[in-house]
Image (tube, rainbow, N blue to C red; front, side):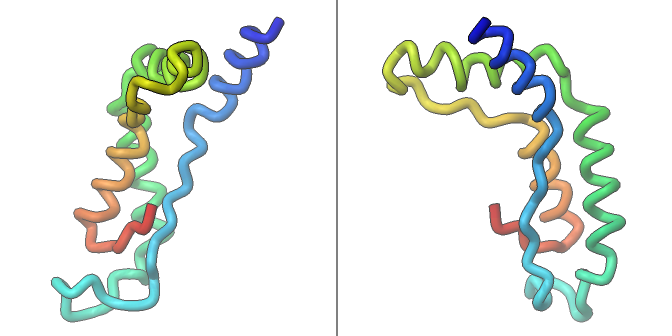
Length: 100
């Protein structure tokens, strides 16, 4: 029963990454403020990341982080999800300062 709840939680939170973006100023490489396009850029980056991520490998990463890793007393390093990395890189390449 416990594993079923973990699987349900993982599936429900698979694409719940919301990046924190600094919209106060320029990133230093642009002459004008790029934060006016933040909503559009977040939507585009999330869609690009969702289309380019394998759901099976992301599920295994979540299973590893929440089931296998605790059984080894958190000695192995936490696995980074491709969805969050792609979204973060996409927003950074569009000129936004991503804080997380």
